[in-house]
Image (cartoon, rainbow, N blue to C red; front, top):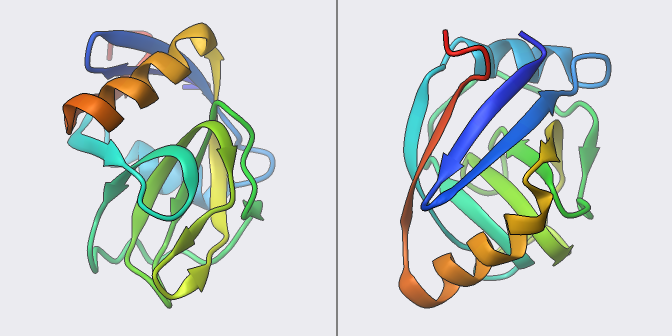
Length: 140
């Protein structure tokens, strides 16, 4: 599976796994599919939404990590100085938490539906948490 379908609120996106640059993170996330959660707006990072995962241990180390994801890039922060989380950038981002700047593993990139990223961000900001589902794009 090279692509994934993401449904968040009323929006749908297709994203590709960044297998070449983040193979362990991609493989681990595939084991969680279909993955259902709620997405909320970030507090410190700028124009992004996140899924807080507390102390959920995915047994991952940094790979293909960045603090400045571009719109449509999805990061998985495997925990450490802050809680485990997934971050979806929709605009300008400097990934951070209350303890300071973070770097997350860039493991997915939105390839279809990018025009709706800002709409999702604004919906989450002004209307609150939204249901999000990550599933195999082929329907499996």
